[in-house]
Image (cartoon, rainbow, N blue to C red; front, top):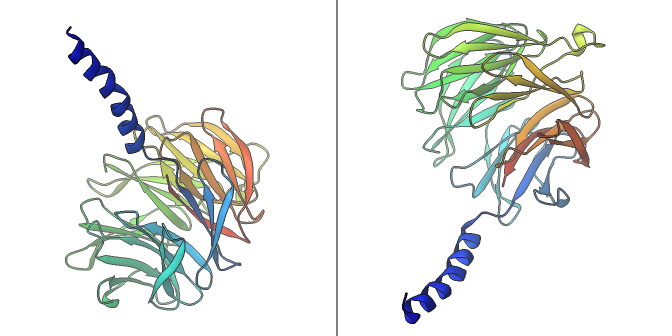
Length: 327
């Protein structure tokens, strides 16, 4: 190798290393909504220390990042609105009035429409984000809660707590095309990465219903029976899925544990002790850390997934509800 070429390569290698380091995303933030403090607590994902508290609207609950991750949308139940937070600035930059009784929501894949459940009026409501106007109202069962849109945007799933149903709604027509009977008080959803299974937590059924999305029938029910707990203390709510679709994490509510479930075998691999009333869940980008919002101990448990245990507890306002990880 001639000297000029060797010199060029030696000079280029450090530059390439610098470029790769610059393009690698540094750990960002973890956002936790606090129902009683009307705030969103911000943690640094690397240090897991609090770096900010954002005043929102009354009783912030469900949260979603926009597709570009530039904005965080926070639904506030007690004033029926969505606060829009600028992620970089860590402050509310806009609000959209919804309706009283707003519970949970999801965003269409194109980011143009927000769909939320109205618990008081038993509705799924569509809001055009550009005009901030209601574009559609769809009647569903009593006390709707969970809302999830399929990845192609063609189907919306909504839980009805009182009717113990999952409603399957055609987005184009705005009609309920099927009602799926599940266990008592269904709450939240998670889709497997291939979109073939919909996991639904049943708070008063101590279970998860697994629905085939091809024919919208219940394929299996995972029941949770941790030793030492009464059945009415096992109240699954939050659920999230690993990117490879092999592991599901289910927050067991008053049982103060998170169940780690093998998706393929449906077996509970581990039960992780966390804080009081484990509720919302958030998984880090590298899937090494699970954040668990504990509604009755006013904190977030930081779970090391490899170790299979909580390694830290961080205060997160009164009655933390949901967790969004932006790292």
